[in-house]
Amino acid sequence: MKLHLFLFGLLFCAIASPSFCELSDADLDKIRLIVIDAVNASEKRIKTEIATEIAKSEKSIKEYVDIKVDSVEKRLSIYQWGLGIFATLFIASMGIPQIITAWKSRSEGEQENKTNSEQDRINQELRAEIETLKQQNNKKQDTPSSVS
Image (cartoon, rainbow, N blue to C red; front, side, top):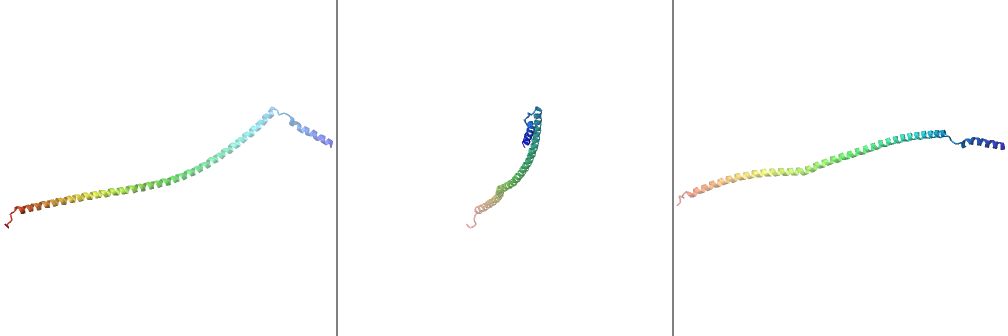
């Protein structure tokens, strides 16, 4: 058993002895190259994943913004129609009474002119009749009465 222990210890020391050696510069360079290759591969993989995620995010954001812009455009279109209808009704409600008032005043003015011209014609006829009556009355007064 002692022999086994001794052989085991000797074997352990033989196996462990390379671990006490120092690494040469060539070994360190090889390790550096392996680490750099692993890091570069990780960087490429991470950059690819990030680029893919960014592309997905940009696409989803673009779709979301397009949907929102379409929604806003539809609402603005509805508001624009509403405003147009309101403006038309407002102009009509203000303009139509003004047009009617102007038309009535023009009609009344024409009727007043007709009435005035008719009144002037009647006045002239009455004056002419009064003049004839005056002349007839004057003729009656100028002629001597046969009664005296």
